[in-house]
Amino acid sequence: LNRDESFPNRKRIVLPPHGSVELVDYYGDDLGVVNAARVSFNKESKWEPGKVLNEKDKGLINYLFKNDHPSPIRHNGFTWRIKAPIFVVREIQKHVIATAMNEVSLRYSEAEEEFYVPDISNVRTQVGKPGAYSYQKLDENDAASGLAYLRESYDASWASYEKLLKLGWAKEQARMVLPVGVYSTIIFSGNANCALNFFALRSAPDAQREIQLYSQAMEDIFRMIMPETYSAWESNGRKKL
Ligand SMILES: Cc1cc2nc3c(=O)[nH]c(=O)nc-3n(C[C@H](O)[C@H](O)[C@H](O)COP(=O)(O)OP(=O)(O)OC[C@H]3O[C@@H](n4cnc5c(N)ncnc54)[C@H](O)[C@@H]3O)c2cc1C
Image 1 (cartoon, rainbow, N blue to C red):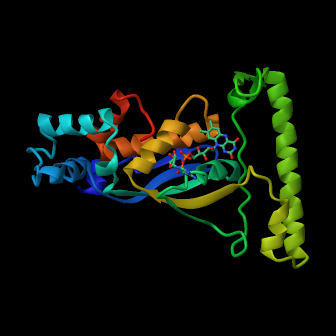
Image 2 (image 1 turned 90 degrees about the vertical axis):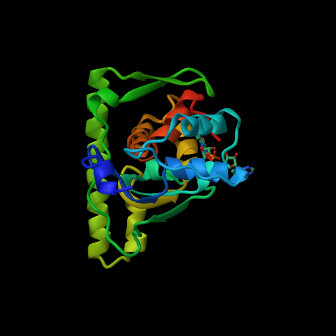
Image 3 (image 1 turned 180 degrees about the vertical axis):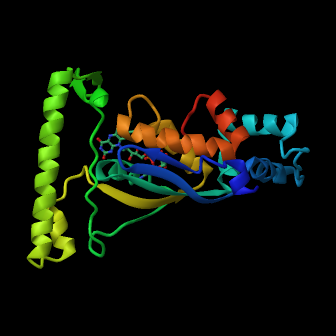
């Protein structure tokens, strides 16, 4: 599969104000899923002209999802470069099984003055009881006042960070004053099973809105690489495998 042809303008999705999701590398495709399943019968399928699957092979992928048979979905790999606020990175980091993650080190490189500020329309208030919270848009005046406090707090943190560095503090200690709204960059890898499990949990309406946007961006890209696998997962209820 020629990567650049398959998603010419969509390889990197920007998530304002400073974030992004980029598929930097991958291997595997829908045919790989089919053939991992067909090896049970010592058989192998081929692409139809136009690099599409025939109806039987599409049906086979659907069968795998319908019958909780995920191992053929694991012979592939996706490597993402994700720039996100630290609180989103921490949520991504919880997905540990069969994944790999590396992160920019603030011991070795200085932080950048890039902080997550939600859009005013996305400032939420939490209502309800533990376990049954819902989120509603906060009144615009309270949202605007809070955004001013947020910026003030970011400015103060950044000023302290710079002062500590100027005093000669090591980066690994100066970073203590940085808030979880500062951006970090990670490389995050896993197979299609990991990706679909991640989407099942993190594109869901009960996930924090900020990580939902990252997950949905990753879904948009994933769908271009493995359209039949994605579509079978969707039509079988977007479940964790
Ligand atoms: C809406 C939401 C709210 C959350 N709130 C919190 C929170 O308040 N605090 C918090 O710490 N985390 C929280 N999490 C993170 C959550 O607990 C999981 O750690 C995270 O979603 C990763 O999911 P996972 O365990 O399926 O992924 P992975 O760790 O990648 O695991 C994949 C699968 O492997 C299996 N598995 C993994 N580990 C084990 C194990 N030790 N034993 C047996 N089977 C295993 C499970 O089937 C699991 O689904 C939240 C997640 C969501 C989606």
